[in-house]
Length: 270
Length: 116
Picture 1 (spheres, chains in turn brown, orange):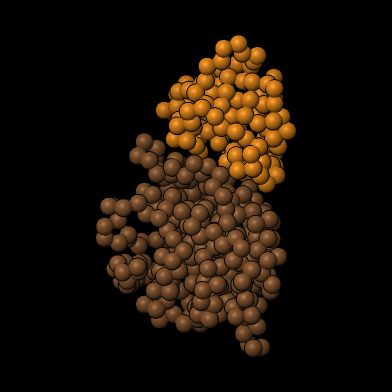
Picture 2 (cartoon, rainbow over the protein chains, first blue to last red):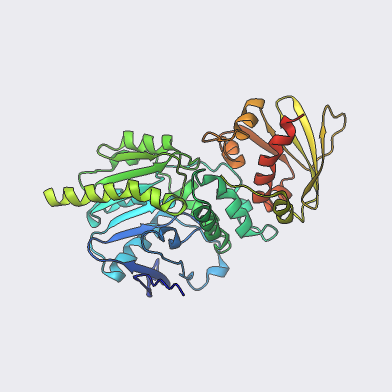
């Protein structure tokens, strides 16, 4: 019998976000420089399984059923900082994808001193909604099926079948209204057009990695960012889509590891 | 690339019974699905077509979509919607309820529409 245990430790941490206690699941692996990983809208931390294999097991705060969930910039930033405080994580490298790629730009503007470096995957200043988001959350349409259907083309064509369908599986399991609520930030409230120019990469380095086949945050969107933010380093990842760490983890690592190496080297020289 | 056998695709769409219009440039095809299988593809011109939803794109956009290795922006129906190469009209409830199925089905229709 083949048994493989993974060197991953999981746990729950309870802390306050926006005045409400939240029970947040996390996993850690390895030691040394902390790398804080932020998943895409409507998914969970299993997307980073190639890095640390994290199942998403957090619960919404009490009262979630009495209101429509809508992620905002303030709530997102507060959640990240509250998690870092609760876990006593000092100056991590924060890496986020899609909504996570957007929020690292907010972090760069609001509190760059709290991070050693920021990495935006599929990162752009804004995305206009290109379909009616109401389809994502209505009881007469299966939420898991439609959310997976909406994002399936965002996976690059070269993704291994296993990783493609695992990425979609995560979308099939999102709580009702979570994807739509996350997109409130991504397609509206979290708009950073006109503000990204103020990001100072001297205070915190910013690296951008974007998949070629992403039509949500396109390579052009990330190129605009790189043009507007002096010192931001962008790399387009050929053949990849919107979920690089999840849809093609091995290919993604080829792009990520040199970035992490560069961050460590520059810190050593500083 | 992902491949789906006809039987498995029909199984996934086994609750789908609908006629939709596929508009390719000036050409129009009425596609009738019964229990997830293609029952009929009726080429136009149609005098009084009756359909639930329509997928409309230019000749060039469909050719790119049906290419063996589609370019970015033409590799997926929602990608084409995003860049306004494809328009979805009518009552699209059945389309959205079965979005993964329809993406795979329309991909397969390319071979049948080309053969005409």
